[in-house]
Image (cartoon, rainbow, N blue to C red):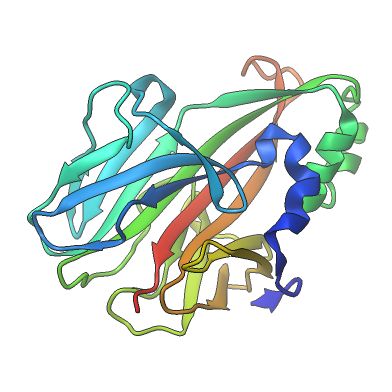
Length: 269
């Protein structure tokens, strides 16, 4: 693991607000710990700096919405329009992993500077050269994107381990924040089930007073990164992969596709 930059105020990322595709997507539980039989509530959020708008339950807008607890996978079912999108209970004890995969969405760029800022922010140094080498327009082009989010919730004793759940790209926690008494959290970033080596990991650290700091890391030869954590803080971990689509791709004319992985959890007091 290599730290890419020192911690900085989340406000420093405001320069990237021009591109809607630079907004993160995550699952935010209303309570990260609860007792068996308690209400499991979580919002689907889109925004920046670990703050954003909540989106309702809309099956047409996602491919997968599950709760994974040990070997048991339960599909989340709700009424269309419900907010929060997850509102249910479980009698099972242990670590609960909420999994959400969106459907494809698309973004049309009409200002190339926004694309340049986005690829610089998400650390795709060759994207501009690839774009030009493919003879793509700088005036107007389409990006397709899909989001893959996970959240860790401790139910009862919270015992258990996070594991890969078969998403195109995902972040796997290598420690249990609810049982392991951690001061550092190791994670592994996967793409098609294999470790992503040398990829940027963006960490959003939210203190109890709502202040957010952002730190950048890079995965090692095992696709892993480790970062310090603080009791009472909530965390959003984000990693993005940019895929160059064929120029004649039929996906509504998209020439790029980005795949966003997110993981949220809290470190208890």
